[in-house]
Image 1 (cartoon, rainbow, N blue to C red):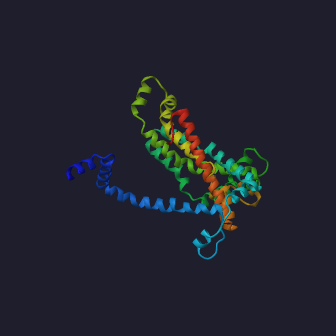
Image 2: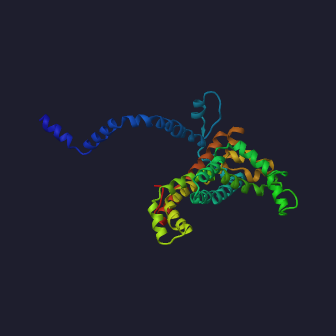
Image 3: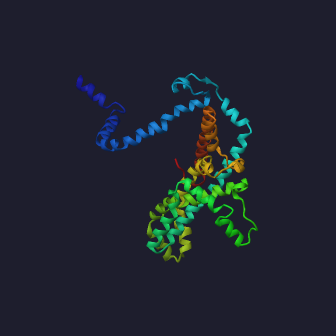
Length: 323
C-alpha cells in the first residue's frame, strides 16, 4: 500500500516539475547567491518605497514619529490630483515638460544613431577609438560642470555670441538666459551633446554583431559604402532602435531635474519649470509632501501607459516590441 501511494504521489501533476525546479535551484545555488545582493537592493530600493505612494492620497503633515504621522494622517482620496489638474500650474508644467522632452527626443534620439554609423565608417582603428572616446566623455561630466560650461558659452561675452556677431547673424549679443523662448532649445541641445556619445555605444555594439558575410555579399552585388549602410547596417539596427524608442517615449515626462535646476532663473521660470523641479519645489521647499507625491505618481502612471501604447503600436506595425 505504501509503495502504491508513493508511486501515485510521484505521478501527481506538477510533482515532477517541482522536483525539477528544486534540483535546478540546488545545482545553481552559487548563481542565486551571486544575484542575491542585486535582488535585495531591488526589493528594498525599488519595491520597498512603493508603500509611500499612499502619501498621495492623504494629507500628510510631518511631526513626531514618521509612521505615526503617516498612518494617522487624514485620507483625502484624489484631492491632491484634482488640485494639480485644476490650478493654473498644470498647463504650464505640462507644456514645458513635453516641449523639452519632445525636442530632446527629436534631436537626441537620431543623434547617437548617426554618430554610431559615422564611427563605424572610420577606417583608422586608432582614430576610431579616439573619436569614440572623445564623443562619450561629456556623459561623465556632472551637470554642475556642464551647466557652467553652457552658461559661459552662451553668455553675452561667450563664444556663441562672438561667432554669431563675426558671421553678422546678429548685431548685438543675445541674452539667452533672459528670454524663456530660448530655454527649451538650450535644454534639448545640451541633452543631445551630453548623452549622444554614450548612447551610441549600444548601436555600435549592435553593429559589431552584424554578420560580415552580409557586407561581403553586398560588395559582390556592387553596393557602395552608402548602400551598405542603408541596406545592411540600418535594417540590422532596427530591433535596437525600436526598443530604445519605446523606452525613450515612455520617459517623455522625465524632462530631467539637474539641467533645469542649474540653468533656470527667475526670468525664464515660466519656460524652465518641469514636473521634476515642480515636485522638488513643492515637496521639499514648501513641505507639501502629499501634493508632490501625487504629481510624481501622475507622471509614473502616464509613463507606464505610454510604454504600453508605444510597445503595442510597434508590435502591430513592425513586429518589433519590448515585450
